Image 1 (cartoon, rainbow, N blue to C red):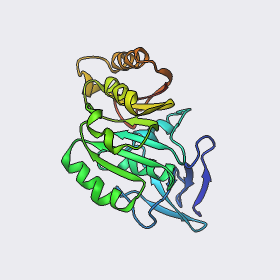
Image 2 (spheres, rainbow, N blue to C red):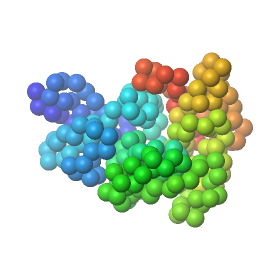
Image 3 (cartoon, helix red, strand yellow):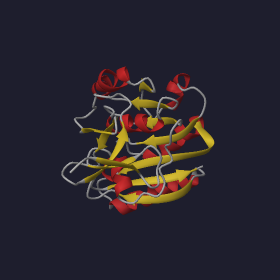
Length: 231
């Protein structure tokens, strides 16, 4: 069976790939041909290379497969990515926004950001690594040019929604969108995940966000949900 690629029916710059064994997977067009980021499969179709997007390694891919209706991140967008780690999902965001977009990658842990710099940002001119703590957005305000279209947040800290809202106050455009990957166990291991999701939603609503949807990420990620909202 030949590889086949077609655009995702809802989301620009995201693709559905049928691999040689007949399985269907998500993919993005590789901005850096012949280079992968986290061991993902590279596949060519009609002279274009695509990176297979692993939902067990990326909460954004998991959310799309779980029926997410809104992916605000689009070609040419400027994105603030909080908790970029070593760049697994951020590199797919880089593919989506393309050469005219930019993703500002905030990461606090030295080892993941070293991997992000050496393996990802060194080859992708539309990514800027920022070694800072997302709880203190004023510390990296100098590095972010103008307002961003979207903020994507995936941090393992107790006040995830508050951290995101504080960043939005400084950096998000008036009509901007946010995506929050809530890790229930990073917030409170004693509470049910559903309680945590409600609590984080309330924080966002109190800060002026309109919640568009909440998608649970099982079986790809246990006790995780993706909240999508706009200001």
